Length: 162
Ligand code: SME
Image (cartoon, rainbow, N blue to C red; front, side, top):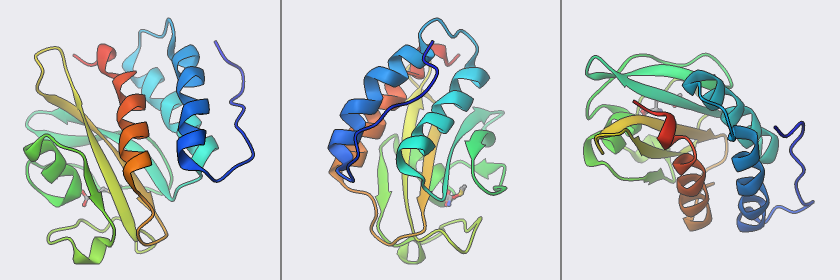
């Protein structure tokens, strides 16, 4: 179990992900509880990136229900195909939104959110069982390094999903 996350003094996202991923692996090693893993995952991501909001929604009863997160209070539940999160679930793909105001149906939990990225996570059947959602207070804050890095990080949570 890692006690603290140590990161290089850089704003280079790819370098930050390269440093964070093995530490996240160590942090989650041996953790068998999904909520504990998701909670520490969000804390570690926020230590690295300090985004406006970062957290999970789980598929529960045909909806996305808020899970562990870091940031201001958030909307829940979210329907299939609704908002960025529900769309990432329905399409089963990573969705990057450079300007949330330009995304039809975006669900505004906070007026500070300007751009967003949502990564679907898969359960044991292979179906989407959760999404990881990150909101930035800056426009166009997410690019290919985040798509790759967050996807790799989320793969560390997938084995714990039902
Ligand atoms: N903006 C999201 C809703 C979740 S919050 O950002 C935490 C969406 O459109 O699905």
